[in-house]
Length: 398
Image 1: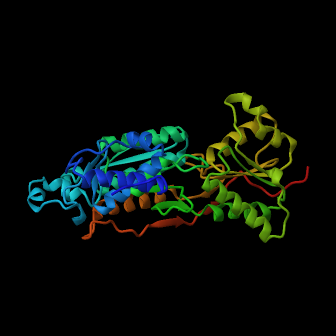
Image 2: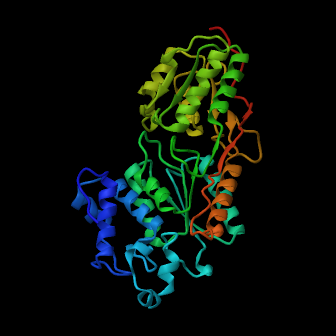
Image 3: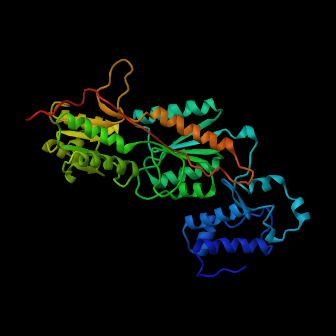
């Protein structure tokens, strides 16, 4: 079999490996060239190589071992002409692994899950982790938690590290970025079990569990509107291109449009930074607050809402009398008393429980009789609630 430069890039890689196997240059259980070597040889991206290898796995030419590489399968397609007596002399484990791309382990060993999230700096994250851990423990799994620090490159590195450690499945809370993480796409094309949390990838089919972000923002605008506020700002220090941010801003705009009101682009504040301490008082967001351009703010995460309240206090502004604030998620955690912030409750405990349950079901389902996994993706979107507390009051003329 030959290949040429006019073929799609992934097909050139695919045909090269297939030809090496059919010609006998690569034998059963031989390790094929690494992804890096193939990238350099064909001058292509990693995702191109991953797509080629995924196709070879699906067709039965190779199997993949997380952390070790890809190897020539035992029971090759009939077109390879492998002699029956040769097939009988190859270990059965490699043959079984060919259909899934992952070498099977002893059943007692299938009990490790990796959970990757950006940070652990608010109560949303803590409540989410607790729920996931409790759910997985009930199913007999252990969990390893790691943090990307909001860095996509670190996220990619940690996913590779999880695979090297031999986890059986992944729960991923992706960072706020406007481009897809290639490692996540690699997991998909290789059939590795994973579930996204609080995010989904537009145009890419995956399992995910998230809140209805559009509805949450609509509920926040509706609440403030009914209190008489008309200059309502929505703000986040995350990328606007992030899908959850996009959905919340879309919900914000939809509610204004539903009411026949004009949308002021100057009140959509995104992708800014807030320094630590009193330096925050000179930030872009602080200048907006000082100008009184808006009488109410929707903060797209709880920690931001709390920092806004601190900035307002230092500037002599009262919350809620001068500025009303609605946050996504409750930034506080008081069991003995009512929390201060009006917030969009996303039920992070249920998000964690559902995501962990879906992942456990996927891992325990295993391969079907035809060697494939169930291709039905579970997409869970939970309905949020608006919890009215003391950080919002009716609009007051100044």
